[in-house]
Image (tube, rainbow, N blue to C red; front, side, top):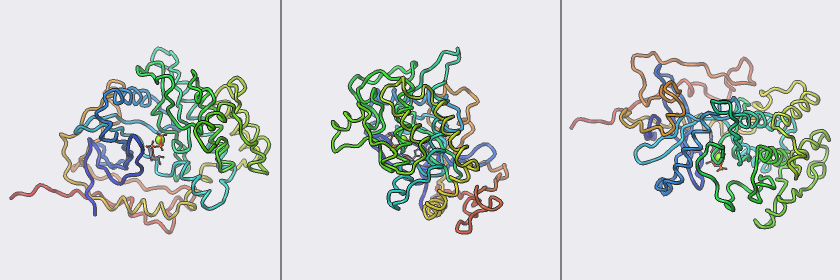
Length: 394
Ligand SMILES: Nc1ncnc2c1ncn2[C@@H]1O[C@H](COP(=O)(O)OP(=O)(O)OP(=O)(O)O)[C@@H](O)[C@H]1O
Ligand SMILES: [Mg+2]
């Protein structure tokens, strides 16, 4: 048993990832009814927490991200300063990011089925469409561009949902901090030519990046790769890639045409909106696999990641929560943008003792009657959270 550490309104559980700027944890919190919520916490690494310029940039970006309310975008709850640390609390997606899915396909030497690739891309296109169309309260377009559409920022839940996350380096007209010219932020492999060249860009840059991600889902190799960054930049600048029909023989020409249109060097030759690209992908699915639903993706992920699913469930059981301290909630630095009734205000590290714990039956899509697959122990989901009192009288 491990003791979960409290950070703000949350109890930190296992670490999902650690990058150059932040670490991601699963965490537990409760609402006023005592209902347990699993959230994802992105905690800024300690040595960066001193950089006020960076923190201001993250606050601005979290403020924009928190305004994106879309079923295909991970919901942002709050950006908090607590106990000298900064962190973002967001919706936890119980599943795998697309990079892990593609790595698994490469390891198994099995392609990602075409229908899943088209479905994932169409859902990501819906997310982009929602973000690109965001307007401020006066109806002025905010011109949000994600800028980092890449496999690690596309999350697929085990129930087959697809969610775009990390509008972390998104910039909108309201953002006060601008990227310095010449500083490239993001992953070059998935950048549009204009982004790689440090030029001004608009939403059509994200469409190109989604094209690069879709290409990789189909070919299991990215459209642009080179032994060094300079050569890579040149390939991206010229949008030079091996035609998809060569990289993945047998691919429906209709799908290859969608990818190539998204990857057009000139932005005027690409889809002019993410919605348009999404419609083309949905039409392709309807023509070729009319019976396709998200439970197809769910079944696939449950099969491919069955061992991880079991391990992840067991890990949740490994943690006991220490005695919650309600004075350690910290300060939500984007509270002004969220208003007084925002969801995070209901989150508390405390279990309500007077509230009967409300339990929802977990539904497993793709299984008979939504029951847990035989290899999973559903009691883990229903297990009450244990609170251990640590304060001992001497
Ligand atoms: N809301 C979330 N729910 C579940 N898992 C998440 C969530 N956010 C991130 N993750 C996991 O953490 C991983 C690392 O995320 P992080 O954003 O720190 O790095 P990255 O995506 O590799 O880089 P970047 O976002 O800077 O391009 C993701 O790929 C995903 O597996
Ligand atoms: Mg990310």
